[in-house]
Amino acid sequence: MRAYIALTPRELASFLHDGENAFQRAFITTQAFFESNSEVDEEEREFDLSCLAAVESRNLQGSNAQVGLALAIDLKSVQTGSEDGNQVLLVQPILWTQVEALLVAETLEAELTWYATQEIADVLPQWTK
Image (cartoon, rainbow, N blue to C red; front, side, top):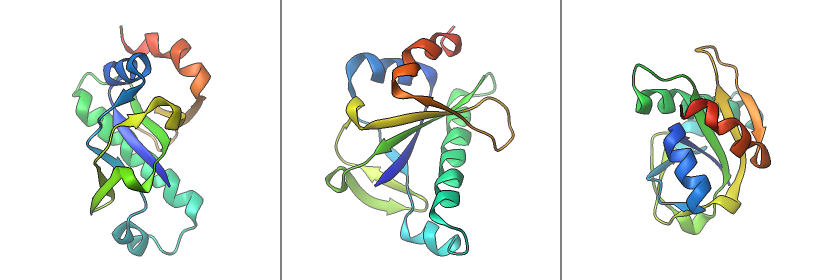
């Protein structure tokens, strides 16, 4: 299942380097989120979830946040625990090989720039200064 993880640039750098991370939560289409957004299609729900993750990323970074980062991952059901609102608790580490893309909110608008996994190492330094 597709999930979106909010993280800071430093957490992203660590995850890229280590190849795995024990993130606590991921944004997914939970039953509650689906019921609240049943009038929109799956693509729009996923966009909304990635935007929520990017906002959460900014919150994690505090008032000096340059960007909001949302990591799109292919989550396995054995990695998930209970649902909490529009998030799921993660019970197993996420591997870098599960990363599908990085979505970046460079402004406060609901616009995200997409980066392929092979581009992340090249663009990451601009956010970890």
